[in-house]
Image (cartoon, rainbow, N blue to C red):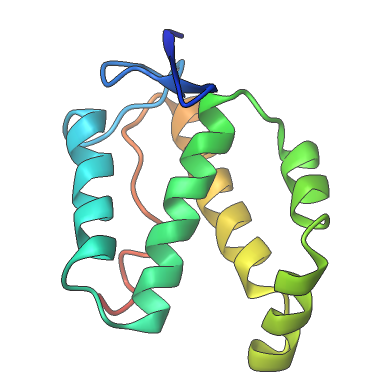
Amino acid sequence: LNFFIMEQIATPTPEFQVAGLSFDRAVSSWIGSRVDRLNAWTTSVETRALLRAELDALMFHVYGTVREDVDYIMETFPIVKRKDADRHGEYRTKRLILAAYDAMAAAIAAGHPYRSPFEAAPR
């Protein structure tokens, strides 16, 4: 994994690869399309949550974070957890991130390109 220092944060270079994880296009294009949708025209609160969850899950994979640690890390955000419980009756942010994380892990294990678990969701 190649990293460069940006504002004192180790950041993957644009051509980075997550061992075994592939997409239907270049990873920079995949990330870029999600960021563009977040920054520009996606107004649906649900769709924005799904896009953020995929990006968060990818970064957990980029940094080699195992699922148990992702689960633990998500529990360190009590305000997000409380607000999700109030709004959705569950810790939705954690559930969405883990769903995307698991789908990426399954793609790696199967040697297939990643397919979003949220594809059937409204965009």
